[in-house]
Structures are given as structure tokens and as C-alpha cells.
Length: 334
Image (cartoon, rainbow, N blue to C red; front, side, top):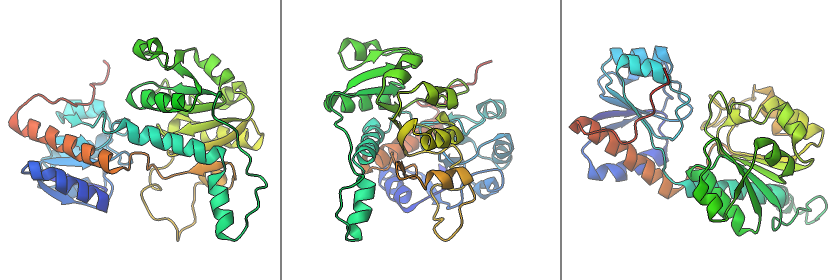
């Protein structure tokens, strides 16, 4: 199958080339992100492979259909950037990678929490400048603290186990509780309100949907325990970023570790070091000493990249052979 892989970086090329040794796909690696303007680059290809910051709206999908693309492979678990209703109308199947490595993302959440709490980012910067003072670097023991895990799918469940290993009490909120986790004593399911009020740390692992968009907004921050830390390795729009700035300024939130940002499209996965960041909210967040932002890298491990490539290429092989698609994105309701 002829595949155009958009938004390709060197690590994508490496992982897909290794995984493709077990297949016979012809892969072209294209640097631009996929949207309506770049979709014509896929002319002559059977399939496209896109990432989380591409924009597959109706216009982009129509262009892909017009030029002969037959299937869309997402090298990610989320699909909120795809108009699935339009894809269904156009007869374009959309496959994804629902579980590449929950450990990669969950471990990054733990890394953000540890770095934020113990001020590792500030200490590292100081020491490089010859400043060995410990003033302003006081953290707290995670042992015995309460962590609220919002979303207990594969990643959230893995994060809960990691946090449990630190001796934390784990409260969880999910619309579809995993009773096996509570039966094993790993966590206790509570209401969202109870989780917000009791937690010293809130870690977000929810998918983005109309129900979860801005689940942490001004009202949620007002209900949180003063000084609680917020970790987000899920989707950027789970947090109302403007409300987060206000909560940080007022001391309601003690710090934030963010691997995602709701307006990251057009910013993340690019070198912007020689440009002025035009997003005023992101620029403001970057000024806080108690905020750590990484550029959507939680997935970036060798194991995860390998699983993403292998699953994506297997889905394309199944499609080409007429076999059932194991990882097709769910059809839109109605």
C-alpha cells in the first residue's frame, strides 16, 4: 500500500522503517502537517497517516477522497481532530492506535509531578549558573498524599499504580469505573467534586469530548484544595487555560505540569525558538516558576513509537487484504 505519512520527524521515519520490515508498504515521509491546504500532497497515495495536531475536518477529508485516498491511519489514540461523521459519509475508514504504551504517558505524568514538586527544573537552571542555594526549592513528600486520577483507562490505571507505589491514596473519577481496580485496592472511585476537594494532586487522563472539555475550569479550580498541583498528559482542552492562569496567580493552584495545551496546534512539534510566541496565554504560563510545560512528548519512548508504527501498518495491511479493522475509530452517534 502507498502511504503518505504527514508531519514526519526523524523518529517517525526510524520507527516506521523498522516496523515496515514485516510489511510491504511504500511509505513517503512528508514534513507538513495534514490539513485542507496540504491534503493535495497525498495525490497518488492509497492511505495517509496523521498525528494529533493535524486537522482532518470535512474540507480536508473531501480533498483526500477526491484524490483517491482510501483510508486514514492515525498514529495516536485520540481522534478529536477528525470529523468522523464526514469520514463516514465519504466512506473513508479511520483507524487509530488505542493502546501503544500506557507506561510511556503514565511515567511522564509521574516525571512531571516529581519535577514540579521538587523544583527540579529550577534547581537545574540554578546549578548551571553556579547558584547552589536551596531557597525556594522546598517540596513535599508524596507518601501519604491524595492523588486524584481523572480517567482510568489504560493510561490512567497505569498512572494510578505508579502513584500507589509512592504510598499515595488514589481517588479516581471516571464515567465508566473499572471495578477491578477498586477491588484490587489500587484506588477508590468518588464523585468529581469529592476528588477535586480532597486531592493534593490532580492528574488528567481523560479523552477529550464535549463532556470533558474544560473539566478543570474556574469553578473546578475554586473547589480544589488550595495549593494542589495539576498534571495534564491527556488533552490540552481538558483545562481552561485562561482560568488556570488566574488560579495560579491567586495561589489557588500550587503548580502545573503540562504536556499538552489546548491551543498547541501550530506550535508544538515545531522549532519556534527564533520567533515571538503569539499565544498570550501560553506565553503567560511560561513565565510562572511553578509551571512546567513539555511539548506533547509523553508518548515519546522507543517502545511506544515501535508499537504505534506496527499497529498503524498492520491496520493498513488488514484493510488491503479485506480483513476486519481491529482499531477503527468509533462511528459518531446518530
